[in-house]
Length: 260
Length: 248
Image (cartoon, rainbow over all chains, first blue to last red; front, side):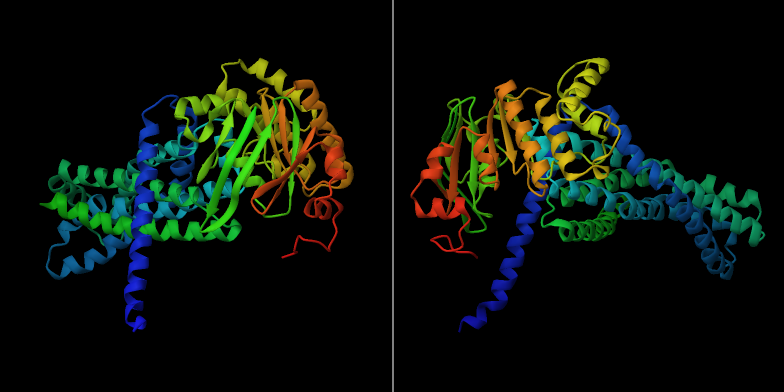
């Protein structure tokens, strides 16, 4: 009769593994936040990581931001024109970018560019015993590796999001005014009338939390990499997939909380 | 003095160390020998506090390293140096920056002083002129010497070597052994060398310990191990295929 229990065994084993992983991730982030509070604050490393996470992702953000705004304007124009509401094109584009697309797409881009690189870098450090070397030198690996990356993520994401949104709005403007003959005043006046500080804050909160989430997962997956080059590749894939999925799930919860 | 008392460690149900007992006197150099996968590196990582035992203790001057709190553990670790098997050099830093790293992070020395110390240390290990190279641009032997320089620059009291000559040709291996011997005699640190270089290692150490099946089965001087009648020890140091050690 033992075959009856096989599905339960499998479910139990997966649940056990999931809970253990969740506990490990929680311990990891608690340790990182704990070490964030104590000096030395390693400002140089934080700046270096802002360059790595933020500055190096900027070209991708510039491209994706502009084209997202452009395609959004193009699609929305054809929908609005059916209702004779094409004057609302500016606010629709801007609101979508500020509240939703900006934070989410910029976070996904950072996951693909910097998040994956972070996991691979820390993973290689783990398998080549560089992290053990730090530990053996009585230097705290959390403080030297993890904390600067988490701070860099939290600081970079809102700035990248701002670049994404501004370029998206101007991309939309180029299509609306250049291609669809909408007047420049109508486009920007609508944005001025409809966008509230609350909308901008919502985007800001989202991008802050995404920055935290991406660097947490990327560093965690890298830190616990095992089994050589294959382990690094596996950790990198897991980090990108998990970060991307969690960004979308967390985005839903944040939106539903803030919309109430 | 380093004392390992009844140390047990398992990974995923597989027992690697099953009651290791070992005493190493301060200032001595000891070679830790044994077959591949017998847990020599694991034992080394317990001694420096990178791993915690399932049972047993590692006593460094009568302080149990696995029971120390954060600050005393940090202070104790500062007395150690370790040369990892692959060197564990930071691959994003140059040779110079790798050697300077502990000084920059752990001392308040001015940059010119650090520069002089690093250049001295590099010259001691025969690497003058390689300061600007990255770890990926230097050979395996050079990496080990950079790792040795990085380790010795903080004047540690205890230095652990994890297969310092693995993967090197016999000449470079011999040169590294001589370098370790010279540094150990001049700096008077306690050295533990995990190695497979038998009998070459016998000429540079004071004592030998052999790990087999998770236990230390022999401790003694190089002369004593050469004269040992223990069939396991005899088979291992003479590299005989026939004997109690089965080849897996």
